[in-house]
Length: 257
Image 1 (cartoon, rainbow, N blue to C red):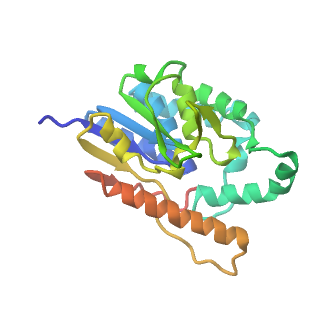
Image 2 (cartoon, rainbow, N blue to C red):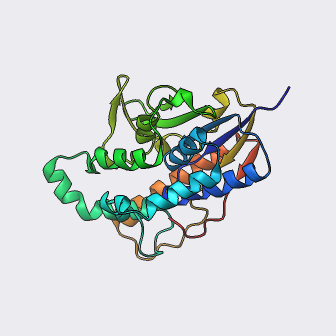
């Protein structure tokens, strides 16, 4: 049977930019990609590449956006850590939430940043169109907060699918979709191996950019404990999903968040 290669790009916040390097290696090696699935930042990178399978162009577009006034104006830099005290993007995110949670509870909000800001960012990176029309078959992965089930997005607006997949709980409000309440795919499927297999791929390359080591806690507070517990859960789930792949790739991201 002729191999159909599928790529599963995992979540990981800013660490997800390591997906660009993995795709470059595959492209340089002339390894064909027949299907892609992505979660959270993996969905952002995956959608960009699926629309335009040219890693040089995708990388340049990302760099332009990250260095633009548009990126600054969106308020997304608050998600980028300023120290190396936390081993994960989520760890930094929880600290951001903790500083604002009293105000947000008082205002009964479901997210710190308005969805429109994320939508503006996605529109800078991903072309308008439907997810089923990409050059490489692609799906984005989200989570139904009502049932805990993974939501496999394979049709409709590609921008909206990526927004659903990358809406970090508590930071970006969840979305009503198909009688579901959907949020970040990393909650249920941090590395979407089974999802890309469902797309017809029979040889899966999975990329996990989650934290690969934990620093010892020193006099932890409640936020530290909650953060560490969530990190451990995410690492365990990602590792479990990685075991289902034919090739596992763990880019060296050191202490990147």
